[in-house]
Every structure is written in C-alpha cells, then in structure tokens.
Amino acid sequence: MTRDVEADAVVVGGGIAGLTTAYLLAREGQRVVLLERDEIGSGETTRSSAQLTASLDFRYYELAGIHGEQRTRLIAQSHTQAVDEIERIVRDEGIACDWTRIPSFLFAPPDQQEDLARELAAMQSAGLDVGMVGPPAGTRDLGPCIRLEQQAAFHPVLYLQGLARAAQRLGAQIYTQSLVTSYDASEVLTEGGARVRARHVVLATNVPVADRVKFSFRLEPFRTYMVTLDLTDALEPGHYWDTVDPYHYVRLDGNALLVGGEDHVVGRADDAEERYGRLEAWARERFPVGQRREAWSGQVENTPDGLAYIGESGASTSSPVTWATG
Image 1 (cartoon, rainbow, N blue to C red):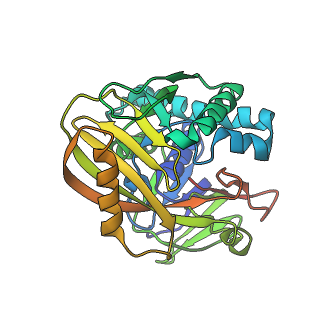
Image 2 (image 1 turned 120 degrees about the vertical axis):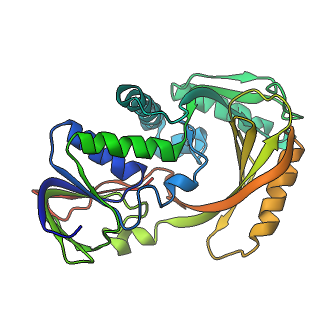
C-alpha cells in the first residue's frame, strides 16, 4: 500500500474471515480494500487442520446450559450455513481446493459414555443430523461414536488463493506487506503512511484489537499441536474427535492422517516434542498409521461462552468498526 485510497469498506486481515468479508462485500457492489500485514493466509488459517464442521470446542450440552436451547439451535444453524456458504463459493467460483463432504465422528473413553449420550441428545435438540453408530471401519477400539452428517474438508491455502482471485475480479483491492498501525471508525493508517478512508472498518485479526482492554482479558490463548502420519490401511473418511481433556482431533487427507491436540494454555508448557510424541502414540493405538511426515503447532483463542467475537465495537453508530475472530 503506497497511496491513499477511499473505499466503502476496508478490511484488516488476510485470513479466511477477512477474505470472505472482502469477497462478499465486493459481490454486493461495494468498493473494498483489504490490508494484510504479511501475506494472504500467513496467520492461523493455514495452520489449521481445515475441518469444516458444526461441532465446536464446547459440547452442545454445555452451549445449551450457557445460551439456552433456542439460541443453541441458532448456533448450530449458523455453523451449518457457514459450511454451506463455503461450498457455494467453491462451486460458483470454480475454486479447486480439494473440497469434500464427509461425516464427523465423536467418541469417548469407557468412563465418559454417559457424556456421549448426553451430547447426542443435545445435538439432536439443536437440529443437527446425528446418530449413534459403531466404530468406523479401519479404527481400533473407539467404541460407540456420534456420527454427524454433511461436514466438510478442504485445502485452506488453495481456497484462499481462489477466494482472493475472485474478490479481485469483483473489484476488491488487496494489499499485502501493509501493516496497519492505527485506525478509527472512518480511517486506517498503514506503516508506510498510506491511508484508507472508508465508511466501514472491519478488523478480521483473529484476536480483537478493538477495545483491547475489554476483550484481551476474556480470551484464553491455547497452543495446539499437530502431526501428519502415513496411513497404512483403509480408514472410513471423516473427521474424528474424542472427549478427553486435552482432546484429540483427526482428519483423513488422502493417504495421510492429520492428528492434532495436546493443547495447553500459552506460556504454561515448553515441551512441543513430547506433545508430538504423545499425539503419535495416541494415534497408533486407534488408527492404521506409519511414519511421521510433518509436525507443527498453531494458536487458538477460547472465549468464556464458546462463541467467536463478532460485532460492532461501538466506536461510532454512523461508521462502525466491526471485528471478527475465528
């Protein structure tokens, strides 16, 4: 970003939230500018396991206890519709990103079977398409599983590349290497001195930077770890989760298995290699896997009520700052 620009909306952040916002606004005929500090997808989007699902970190019976049954149904609907919207974008824009629809399987150790039954009832009450099934083909000793239908997976980098091209074709201006140093309800300033003046400012920055004092103490950052293991035998396609704490999550990707988990609060551990090893050991007991290919980690932010922060900051009623976390 080297010159001043005026727009209807300026979006700060080039991850999936920011690019989706820019694309949808441009599709509606808005003049959009997107600013990214590094490169498109250089944040947490590309560190994820790319599981598109209506299942959240909080169990649905926990969400119902916090938000009530009616709002919990809306939570389930919103996440289901989000997956549907990504599928629509992939189809309409012809984005080659390994999109696929698959089920999800939630399983529990023997001493948590009552919690599994409780979760099944809560998910059914929320309107999700679920049922209790036996262990999927190729797994070992998982026990009964909740099967959640019509979930999805994709390649996040390929999707972001296609989404960026589509947004630009619709007129959105995308600038990388453009660090935002300050903003208000009608203007964003970059490190190089260039400004974007806009009627709306959207901060899609993973962690809310608007009202920092208000939100930073409410977020609990967790480090999460992942290994990729060779798949040595057939396995029913799907996502897999368990109910232990810290929990584990698994995604089948071709001839590889992505295994994640061993989360901890940021700053409370410095033993990444040990956690990668525990992920491998856990996976070998339950899935047909061989050699490790890769290992990496990412960071997720937990909120007190299990939902993302999305909304207006209250900076101005006529020209609001909007923020969204993943």
